[in-house]
Length: 235
Length: 395
Image (cartoon, rainbow over all chains, first blue to last red; front, side, top):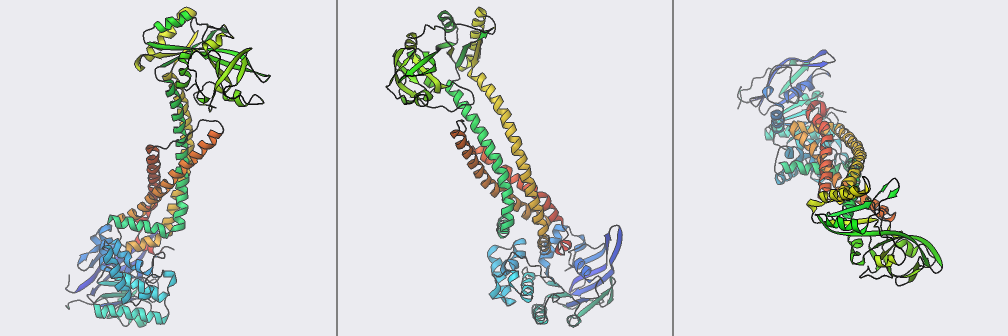
């Protein structure tokens, strides 16, 4: 494990099996992401970028290869270990927000905390602070259907930060937003990276977002065609 | 931690108000059906037992029977012989006759039961009848009678009240009491509504009958009842032939009635089980639908750190709570239904009562929770094993 390395993939393969037919999605992907780095993953539809994200974030097991997160080999962990590890180390932001519709903003932000055993009082305190950070103090008791897309995505960002993870993963975070809301969301994410030193990994179609990243990984047909050769040795 | 899951499960149920409510209905109906049926069944058992209890466990009924249509006539000598059997404490012969009762010029046919007035208490203590108005016999009042409810109020143009004079077979009698209407009882019992009760001295004025229609024998103890009953049967049959007498102990009657009740209870349980199965399928259906609808939610829980076990426990707890809440409401509804059935049954003359025991309550609740959790288990297990990615992208 190289010093300063947060994520490392070694020859990761993923093959989907559908009705007995093997469909390769990742064909031996290797790269490293350094601590505090802003990385974008880009590529055309069907190139395997979402599969890459799912495998990298332990949401899905790879068919072959090794994955390390903060020095721990996640490919060796059990499902239960993975769940708790994932909850604490990685904050997720989804294109479709994935807020729980029956919960208000505050409860949505508190959800990862109760799942992971944060005490009751602490949960509320932290959730309120996070919603203030994403400028939604006045929307705490609104349910998702009472909020705009941009507001929902900011709630999702607050939720991703609930367990103070070092890694924030965003899958097309602006994909469902108008440009103004999209800019606001990206500004918040950029701030997390710049001011709080979070490692930010963004999957995007949007070249203007992708280009701002320190490392740009471009993937096509399950293989990296550009980027991914970085060696971490700073810090 | 554990309390957190409980609190969040309860909150989830509240948030999913309509779905929770519809699932609850299924549990409530199933449990209410079972509880009401079991409650009525238990009430039936209690009613029969209390009636037979009134007879006393030491009581033996000796009824002269007929061989080839000739009824055995027991003589005073036979009674003395029975009294002489070891194990017999005392006996009360009851004499039956029929007669014509006349009041205000109207006449009807009635049954007459008589016993020595010193033993008249036997009617009351065995639950044979209950004096509603007036009083029971106190001494050998040869002109005093007690009349059944039907005779007093239904047969004559004007009701026969206490202290009225009537004639039976031409002789004058004074009504000293009127019996309470008795519900038709399960174990059977005398039709007291249509009967006139009088001391033996009173009967002697209109009849020369000397053979008792039934004899209440009291044994010296519970443990000798069966032997004593056998000895009585042997004694009579030795003289009059086999089948000349029917001898019952309270226990024997109870056994027969219990057997009948057992059959009824099994029948009732069968119907109740069907309703519970239907209820259970309803619960399972609701649970599976609920899990399918919440697939995305499960995916999210897993993405933010919930293990399979945690997802399983959340869903199982929710199912268990639905069972518990449905069970509580179901038990209350069931008992309410049983009570209503008992009230209507009582009004129609049947001795029904709704009985609620800790066993019925705990059984009902336990059953509801188990059914809830069992029906919730499969969908919850499925939910817990979902791949987080698949679950999140589920549409």
